[in-house]
Length: 200
Image (tube, rainbow, N blue to C red; front, side, top):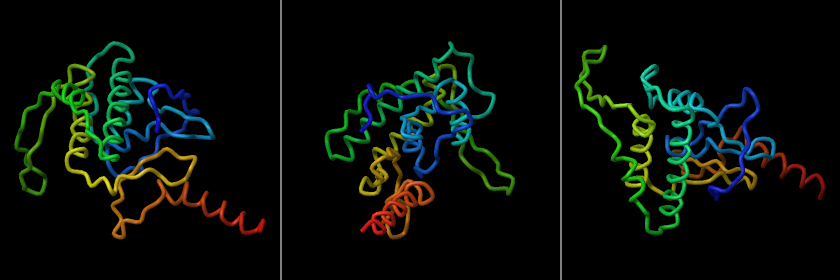
């Protein structure tokens, strides 16, 4: 497991995090990954975090507050490592130390509204306050809390490739998913097996 002391590097220009987790909390963990044999952290700036939240539909573009430089990045990294610890505790069927995540969630304030959809149906929408770094991250923290409370942790897995640190929620019908993605680690495994057979 990664620890707070694991040294990470900035990704190469143009490199992007993988969205293979099938759950926002797991995709958050996957913003630290092994790329070209180096552990990289895709959250180097506040903008990196905002772009990621936007791709996850967890922030409304243009609604982020003006914050001190790196305040959002640092809060996001702190939340990520807290959630990493809690998910590992839950996976190992240990006591989940919930106080710190509850403290984070206490920053959240939102209004609930009914919103008319284009097809005429009515949906419930939450409009979050976003005046601090923590408040910007509340939808992500809530997603992590939901996973801890209701997730089936027999289906929360780490990729089986020994050089990979990515996590995923196995939503396949057979529940036999082994790799973060077949294109990445599944193929690497097949190639390694083929080479071993050739050598024998």
